[in-house]
Length: 188
Image (cartoon, rainbow, N blue to C red; front, side, top):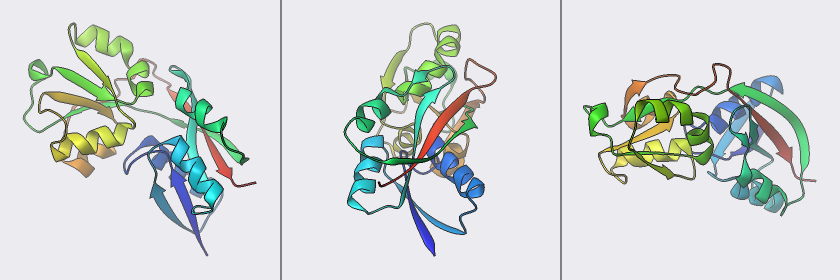
């Protein structure tokens, strides 16, 4: 029997990584992931029955509470199946051939920007930061040409290969041990 799992991220996101981890922990044989990008969409899909399980982040050891999750959780009723953590390693990604000196903007999810704020402050003195709904979605949109060529994104390493981006630097998060707590939720 296949399990339908909704994740609050695009393909290549940390939520996808968390879902894969949960599948191992719960020993779910076959699972189909739906990339719903936001916590709101995951909880809405749980409520209307289009997914059986939802995976979304609630807190990071450095970035704190995921505000988006708190707001969404206040609007829906669900059952927590499991609370678990994954180690989050951020990468700075850009279009192939882009030099660090050419970067005028760094785009990512609010949590990723928070988790890398000291790195950004140390390496980029005058840079515009833009919040995006999801780390992997920012990488996908950069690869598709939706974002300006002088943009770099903070995203998981897997996004470089998925979206044709170049890794400028790996493990740029401020804390060596950067854990995000995720919830695996079902409908009540």
